[in-house]
Length: 381
Image (cartoon, rainbow, N blue to C red):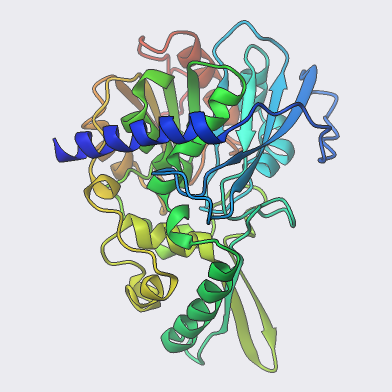
């Protein structure tokens, strides 16, 4: 009950902030060279930039606003739009759609009949200069045994947090729960009342939290590589998903015989907000304390109970988000369908071997989300 009350209170506060701070935005020329492939049937691409509050819980003039870049692709306007949420955290969803999803059978199945909306999550983007503000990265040199030097990383976090505060930017407003209202703002920007959520990997956690807070805005959800709130995101998952272009969540190089590496602050903020333990492989909550990001409380880890029709996709060979995670999430999703591909790994949406079958299942589910999807194309074990 406390979770429901807190979520309702946050949603009400966000409604007031949204009404008082957002202004209608006129369409902008797309700053991205989409170079749409001949096979893509998109007839219109529209880009917009909107500003949203850094802190959705209340209007604060002392905080720098957050700019969100949004892209809408259309070939038809007749059906409920699909909103795509990428993994990471910190991966550019726009980049994934442009360079991978649109070229896939799944992407083609979506844009053939529905508008597709995509935006880059607040705080980071794999495209330089797109995020505003960009929280940046923590850089450090790995020890000889390949471990992260906790003290060095903590000092780097302290310096980075101080620099961000001078810009009136606070990482605590970039966690999963703190960012959920951005989705609502994006949907409302185009005047839509409801969407179908299509999320991959970490994006599935954002989708589930949005389903909890704004169920009236979600017609159906498709979750590929499920990470439910009760699942603590592993360091390996946070450092990089197997989707196109996710070099933003972590990278490494060498200098003077030492391995130099970095990971994005938005990734650290999400891990700190999403779990009580913070970042166990990076010193627990020491970095969280340096960044001044606390655990977001019971809402961050409570299973999502929902009657929204939901399609859960999993690969039997997925070591990052195994089918057991989808099965656990499904226990509290009363109208969910889980499809497991026996010889596939992480992220079926962009898996060339199974994507045609995935597209067939996804298209059937979107057309009739309350019915059990046909899965005859799924290979048998």
